Length: 410
Image 1 (spheres, rainbow, N blue to C red):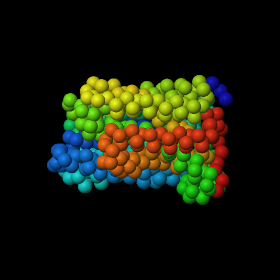
Image 2: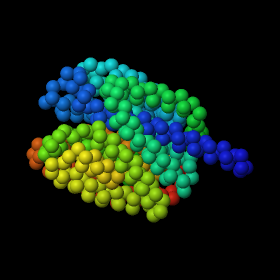
Image 3: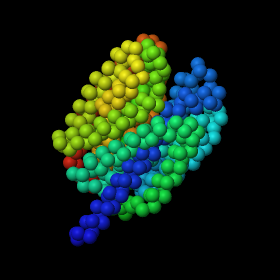
Image 4: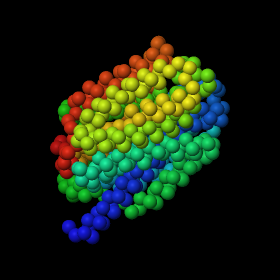
């Protein structure tokens, strides 16, 4: 291979990582924007104060269901027709939904549009991580996915800042970001691994293959379960800051928007350390273990801070974010566990199923909170999810140095 060819390959890889990173940036922006503007937007469309929490849970659950469905749709499309088509189709649907979202005036329309945005959003991270994992060498793909996560997670910071312009404008900006990203993607290219599989007769994107083999199904399930504690921290402990603040005796109302912004800054920093730790130890499993254990410490610190102030909440949100900063590592593990003909389906559905798991997590947490109170319920839910995640992690094989150029046999 000539120097010119090597230079071109390097430029293509850098551009691909940049596109995937910005895609995840938009992904995170939209994913957290409702949590940030939840109270203001629901009040603006006439939801009474007493109904803010249940109606907010209703909307976010509908959005998460859209992510679940979208993850399945885009994952199959990515394996059957190529990763690039997912990058274009998902961002276009997302952009349209966000422009419409800025025009809603009732709770049901709000929920429906969030559902559509969720479907569109679902393809972003999975397609990006799949392309990066298949394009970069096994020695460098960990760095690539780390960069995607770090840049992407600052979408939460952008969302928190843009929210000051008003909740409707925040959705309009989200739609505009999607259109800009769509234009940028005109220069992207398909992965070589997928091209080789596309030209073969092997079954591609057959979701039934994940369920017709017990060993493969359990591996898929474990990939999902190891990420559940992260989304609980962001989707419940921080998103319901107002309610947790009341339970902890906060002297003033805690703002979820600030907590989410600082938690995602923490997650971005955590992702850097997780990526570096994985490279040093050459083990993604050890990295996940360390961060899962640290997350117990940070959540315990949050739930035990009586009379929590807004400043303490911000620092604790940052601390919790750092300790659950294993998102890139978790998604990379999923991508590395399966063959090229199923990789997009798995890598797209796994993170979205983790996000969608917020639906049963919300239900379970509400049950424990009503029976034992917000604080005890918070401890119980975190304990259950962490034990499940640790067991699931123990059942997965180490994939740090695994060659990804293979297929799953039906």
